[in-house]
Length: 110
Image (cartoon, rainbow, N blue to C red):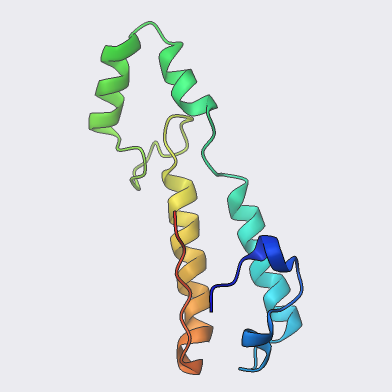
């Protein structure tokens, strides 16, 4: 079953409750995911790259040297969203560590 935190709020979906996931575990997962979403990319990143003197050349150089969604030392720059991707990957692994023994699996769509 496809479950969305937007449609369920913090109420545990029945599909998870019947498999043994507790309300408190669900709330922790939702809270962690909302915390990660604070790092989600916004329009500020691309606009920030265009405001610097290098314009298009600088933008291309940044994208070549520091892939937008990569895990690199400068992933905290506004033009990169690697920290958001890494947070989502880590969250998904932690959730699946609990779900997989129950024959369930979480998959995020980006």
